[in-house]
Length: 129
Length: 129
Image (cartoon, rainbow over all chains, first blue to last red; front, top):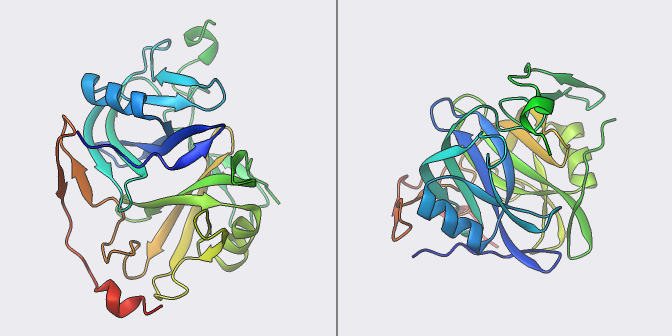
């Protein structure tokens, strides 16, 4: 079993970076951290799991919302400390209701932000806790 | 001027995550950290700058190799601690000679890695230091 290089230490936890990308369109959906347990669960279940550095625990993406990510392909980078999951995204990846977390476009001089995507769902109805 | 949320603390440095993606094909090229100085230089020059956590310094991508990334579009995620640069990549993004750092495909059971891309250049000829 391949073990990524969990070299990023945040609050004493060893982590790799994990990007999720739409497997059909190539749209980048989100980026988060992943620890060894979350990586192993992702492999076992073929559904993306991450590690939340704010909640300090493993996080099954879509556990509450149903917006799970079915993993279609796994790539790892040159030094094996970053993972790219090509996924089939159910619902939306973002807790704000957007399909991708990257829905804010920054102007070239970084003076302003424009939202470039509409929301797909109402987060107040999906996240009840 | 927009200031990303440099909330990831690594070795006492406040950082955001920065992904580079080919602006035409959507291929993810690399992921690294970015600090405030590197972000500001990226905005000023329209060329990607990062922060190297192994060398503990700002890093102008392509400074040595000439493989600079011309920034075509900048996106920031929901909580503004991750940046997505859509870039025109000169040469290859990876120090191994590959176009993308994500050239290793992990099998679905994570038992093996297959290289899915050929190298574009010989790193020994490009990186002389």
